[in-house]
Length: 515
Ligand SMILES: Cc1cc2nc3c(=O)[nH]c(=O)nc-3n(C[C@H](O)[C@H](O)[C@H](O)COP(=O)(O)OP(=O)(O)OC[C@H]3O[C@@H](n4cnc5c(N)ncnc54)[C@H](O)[C@@H]3O)c2cc1C
Image (tube, rainbow, N blue to C red; front, top):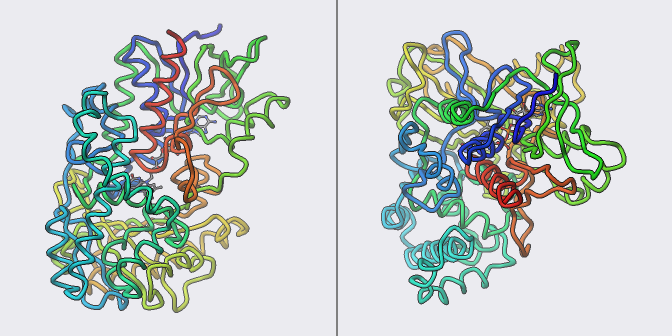
C-alpha cells in the first residue's frame, strides 16, 4: 500500500513545520515525518524529572514590534491568536571584569542612548551616531528585503538615500571594524552593546556587520520575547495547522530515501518507524527537506549527490551550543537573580573578539577557564513553562563537535558531568545559594545537538552567516532535484526567524511552481 500526499516534510523543525503548515493552508494534504519521538527539532520543551527544560528559546523578536521574517507565517496562519509573546523587561544584563560594574541593556533606541550615555558619557555623540547607523542599515535592509508591497515602497522611497548609504558604507565591514570606528579601543562599550553576539557567531572579527545590524537592530528596537508556554507551543500549533487541513503527522519515523521519478523529479520517500521495522513508502510531488542538506544527500541516488551538494560545499557551518538546565526549588529572584537574561563573562574575556575562544574551553575537563555563559531565568517573566514543577534556569555557551566527538561513552559522560558541576559552581559564585537550591539538572553538548537534530557537527543555525560583502539573496530553497525544497535554517538563515523564513519561502516556491 502506498500513501499519497501533496507534499511530504522530512523533519519537524520550525522550517519543516512552517513549510508544511503553509502548504496545508493552501489546501494541500501534507505528511510530516519526524525521526524523534517529539515534534519541533530544536524548538521543543520537555520534562526532565520535575523540571521543565526549554530546548532552545531564549529570545526572539515579537513580529508585531519589529520587522521580522516570522511575521508572514504568523499572519497567514493566524498564529497570534494562540501564540503569545512575552517580552523580557530588557535585552540583557552583562557581568564580568571586562565591563566593570554590571550593565543592563534596555530595549528602545532612546532608552539605550540614555543607559549607554550614563555609563559611557565620553562616547555620547558616537553612541547617537552608532545607533542611527544601526537603525538606517536595519531600515534599508528591511526596504530591500522584499517583505513590502509597491505602495509601501513608494511611500518610503524618499527616506532611502541616507539609509542606503548606511548599507553601502559598511557593505564590506565586520562587526569589529564598525565598533572600532565608533568606539576605538573601548572594549567595555562594545561588550555592553553586543554581549549576546554569541547568538549569531563565535567571532565578531568575521561577522558581517549587516547581518548583525539587521538582527541586533531588531532586538535594540523592540526587545526580545519568549513564547508563553515554551517553544513547544509554537511547534505543536504548526503541527495542528497541518493536521487540521487533513494532513498526517508522524513522529518516530526516520526517512532514509528520497525517491525520484523517470524525469529526476522527487516523487516520494521511504521511511521506517523503527530501526528494524518494515520499510514504508509515501508519494508526493513536493518534498520539503527540513533535515540538513548533509543528511538529505544520503537519501538521494548516488549519481545525483555531487550536483546536489555543489551549492553547499563552500559554505561553513554555523556554531553549535551547549546548555546546562537547572530546576530550582525556590525562585531564583530570592538568590539575587534580577534579570531574565544575564551574560556572564569570565575574567579571561578582555575584549569582544575574545568570544572566539569560548567554545575551545569545553575541549578539556574544567580547569581555571569558564566559557562565556548566557544565563536565562525563565521565572523573571510570565514564561508559563514552570507549571507546578521546579523553577527553570538555563545557562548556554558556545560549543563545537571537536570538543566531544572522539570521546567514548564513559569519557563523554564523565566530561559532561564535570562541566555541569563547574557551571553550577560558577552560578553559585555569582548568586550564592544557587547550588543548594538546585534539585534537578542536565547538560547537553554539541554532540547532543548533532544526535537530536541530525545536523552536521551539531550546527544549530544552519550555515554560518554569509561572509561580508556577499551579494544576492541569502535564501536558497531550490535544490538541484526538482520538487525537493530546503525548508530550514540552512535555507532561510539561523534562529526562529531564519528557520521559519526558510520554511515559508519553500512553501511559496512550491506553490508558485504548481500554479
Ligand atoms: C540551545 C539552543 C538555543 C537556541 N536559542 C535560540 C534563541 O534564543 N533564539 C533563536 O531565534 N534561535 C535559537 N536557537 C536556534 C533555533 O532553535 C534553530 O536555528 C531553529 O529552531 C532550527 O530550525 P530548523 O527548521 O532548521 O530545524 P531543526 O530544529 O534543526 O530540526 C530538524 C529536524 O529534522 C529532523 N530530521 C533530521 N533528519 C531526519 C530524517 N532523516 N527523517 C526524519 N526527520 C529528520 C530532526 O530530528 C529535527 O527534528 C537555539 C538553538 C539551540 C540548540
